Image (cartoon, rainbow, N blue to C red; front, side):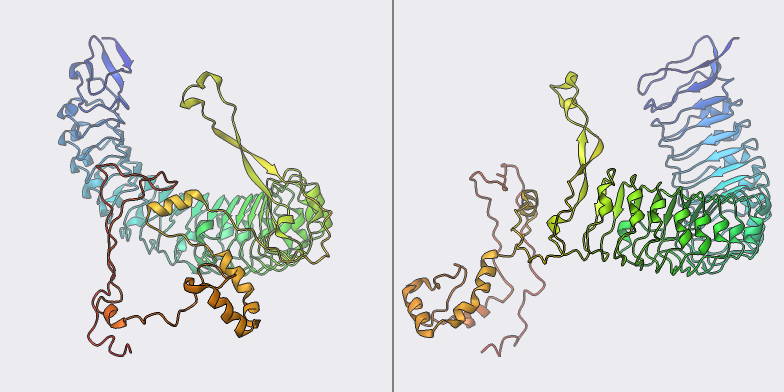
Length: 631
């Protein structure tokens, strides 16, 4: 009998039966199938079955005949439960059930003693089988993005387990014997509610990657001083305080490459931190996006960096934003591999002289500090592409800034510059510039601005008569305004009168449809207020003459039409009658929009639903005696 590997092409919701050959591998992925129908006689030698991306709600019972099956991928289906026939797949080694609707795993799955890998991410699991410890050969267990609240004690019997990923669940504590697992080199327990790590951990000497982001961990156990092979250590957004690291941390964990403890309350790094010579990435700043920070401190509380920090010669990216740094170490410029540094929202007054030795630095963020000046040789950082210096106290830029010809983004917003930097003449690659809110004595319209403009791809003539021929935004090209330096900056500029901005028609249309109101200050009224002094200086006799001329219109000549002069001869208002209706009551009548052609309104169709009336306020009823003293 000839064996072959067959990849079948099928129509939706049907499968053709196999004839004449025995199948070793069957690929039916992403066919939108609802029923799995396989010729069992020709599939007894099947070892690899892939049925991901279909619409299966259950698996058939004939699985018990697939005793040679080693690989089963059934991701992205609608499976709710696994059949009992699973226990007959004694040779199964790789089981993947990602993105289904499994509420629980059938306990019969624990009879699969040959199983080495099981992946059940993105389901609805609330627990794992208590008998999971029977799978002695299991090496990879991934169950992230579920609703698991507690791990079974049998998990600690998986002596060959090397990878454990239980992130994004609702786990509050780890099993008491979790530290007895001796083969783990990859652990991810991020995004849970865990507050305590085990006191001892047999896998510490071989652990390579440890992820514990977004938990409630307050203390690092002693085995953090025994991580010689650790390369990635991420524990951002926890509750760590003070100096949680052992003193010899840097001496032991020399293989560490990525270190992320952002969003904690750490005040000090270990004295041996500078010995992590293989470290490439350090994040001790904020875990919140830039737009959501709102000026709060979301990083750590580090006032100074440990001695020897400049020895991190492999460091390429450093984030220390939103801390309490008031200075940088003198050897900071020794970070010869540094390409990106974020020191925003600290209390730094002066940069060290060695800062200009960071010749590979491409992105430098120094916003919201207390810098008054920059080093004279700051322009030696010729690799810079982005420089953020906004919200400082800088009065002038050093002459060496002319060397930063490759700079693309320059932010000097809200400083104390008194003139336009002359270095802008040579920065021909700028596509982002902001020097507003400085101390320049000139009109805001005279301050140069650079912004990004849209550049669209050429239209394809082959699609000129359909939607494919519309322009597409492939990339952007800077639109640069010419900068003029002939302006006399010493001359005081009179306060200019801003022209009245035009209405935004899109905003108006949205407001009308939502039943909202848009207001704008009346320029006519402000002009009338400016001339109010002249009205007060007029003689009363002349004013009376003008009042007589206006007759019943009750308007003052020269004043706007919305300013009305009281008529003493008018009948007094009857407040008693109005109080009977209640001060907060009003009629609610729906009126269709004007059927005339309008710029904003639309004409409702006959089947268009009526608009809902506005809800009344909570103060509809008058309290007894509320207005007895109205007189």
